[in-house]
Length: 132
Image 1 (cartoon, rainbow, N blue to C red):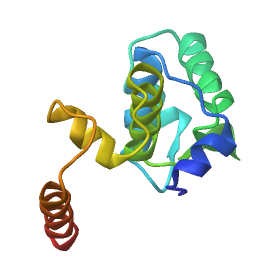
Image 2: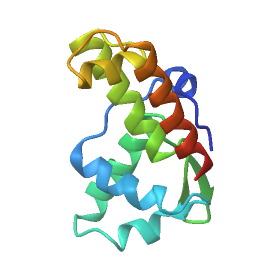
Image 3: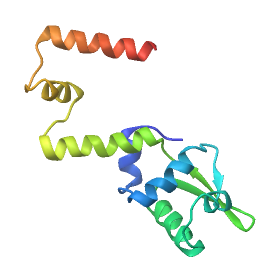
């Protein structure tokens, strides 16, 4: 499974609809892959609708599809966290011209820049999170 921001851009991933996101949540819960039959059993839509939804998800570059007998195995290409963060960062850039983590933290503090001691504290918090 790929996990970097560049992977998202390289794959040309497009935003999922709410229904596609529900299907993708099931796929993300099975990083080793899940068959179409298993996915179909979890949703009430007509078979053709479910098939179309999975086809659209594949077309958006989020899964590898491997034929397995009569069915297909859907394996996520990226994590849910990577997917969400890619759209979050894109929105931050477009809406607020924020291009860095420091800029995001500063914006949440109501400023455009952080003071040196604030930068140090944020770095310390990040290190603590990394070590958990």
